[in-house]
Length: 101
Image (cartoon, rainbow, N blue to C red; front, side, top):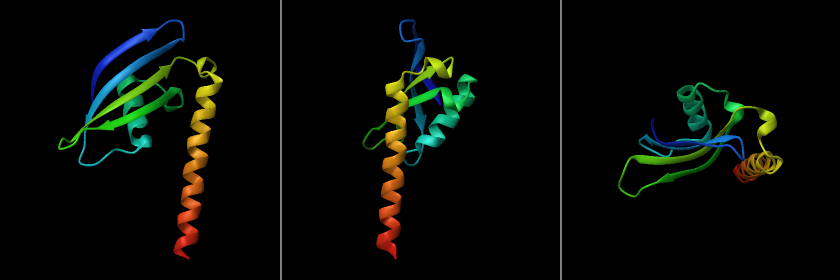
């Protein structure tokens, strides 16, 4: 992983990260958060992953993420957005299981 841009936003109390990662296929959100946490020496709970962008014909993916210092600094809307994504994934998995039966 290579950090392209890292700047601190004092108003929102977070680091805004743009990074690049090389992989054969699109990395999972969980894998990217884990790699970012190791690279930045922080907890995975403090990372909000916004986007993983791929480029046609390349094995490079751009990562857009926010890293907070404290869990209390994460805005409520960010936490709600993450909960909604998780519930959507669970619903999709449940539908796939029903179709497979």
